[in-house]
Image (cartoon, rainbow, N blue to C red):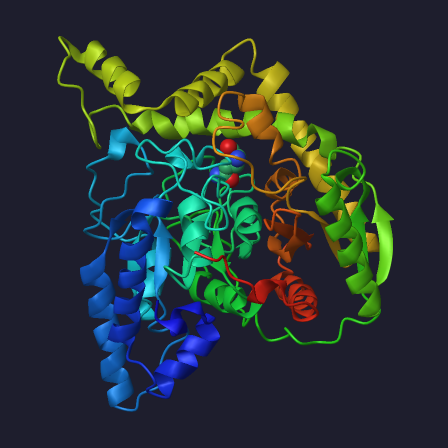
Length: 487
Ligand code: GLN
């Protein structure tokens, strides 16, 4: 492997500017790394070599002419395969979209292209982003670069594994209930979910529109702040996009955090943690103390309902969003139908995988007349109360911390036949989506088997700069983030 691939985007940018390597060479090095690992890891659904190399060439031309480079220009990036890139297959890892070629760019894709970020490929995921282990892909499983017998986490497992294994330096994922933070934690990298509305969802295949948010995977906090800057901003094509100026999120990275109040979420450290995760949490608390922060225990009394609330709202929204896949407008159409009704039903029965079908059925039930008030409406009311819990707690503290997950990456197959056990993996991450607040997972140690542990940090809405500052200070106090999977 080209040693430069192991560096952060900030370091690679310097190397490009100093002409230690050209952008085309760096992109080619990434493709060599992908070739070497593809069979082992299953990271990518497809590669986009032409797009990537064309972009890299433009970067080299600019360098040759001594022009200023846009932020992250020339740094190889993997796009989760539920985001549209013109001319590439966008499958959502589903059979129903197996041969669907994007006729347009997502807003985030256009921003990446404008910033001359080479997009190397479309990363594998759980079908339609539904899952926590990346075992729900209709094509192949993704494996964890730290241990090939373990899951990388989901649903953005391919994105996380690509960055953790240095196939790409940057990746984008989508986070509806934890799908960026969980795989980041399982793969020992940084993964960040912005405030709802920060990043346009136009061109992201919708799962649950009121919860979905696109965000960065990187190997350092600084890179995550910069990647968020590239992809965020108001977009008239997404009615939920916030009309706010783009911030320079890395501005306050190194600000002193002495005197800041760090809230430890009581409900997420009291039970169910493995011993190693529990120890890592104690150490994280000590770290913040040594940086001069005050530690406050915070209770979020309604957090325990968040998984229940999520699985009503997310399934309800997905049953509606996925209604468009019916064999008429997009993707797969059954060849075996005798009439229109059969065409619809067979297309969907043959095109969707079991987890997606389970979600559509649950959501349709929750929305059906007679049950709507008992389930959907109740869940919406409870969502408001969870949001209220966060608001109150942020009156007392600057950030909240918890483990990203009570455990580290598990063996492939360990939870595959038990949907409830799988759903519980997201206990720490889901509530941030319900409340629309930003959250991050950063490396915070290793368990006895050498598997990475993630620390989750949450901040109030729109306080990304604070979130990155508090993350950076923690990151720099240790060298966990510098350790790479030995693959
Ligand atoms: N694991 C959760 C689910 O299966 C979250 C997925 C996500 O964030 N996309 O729905």
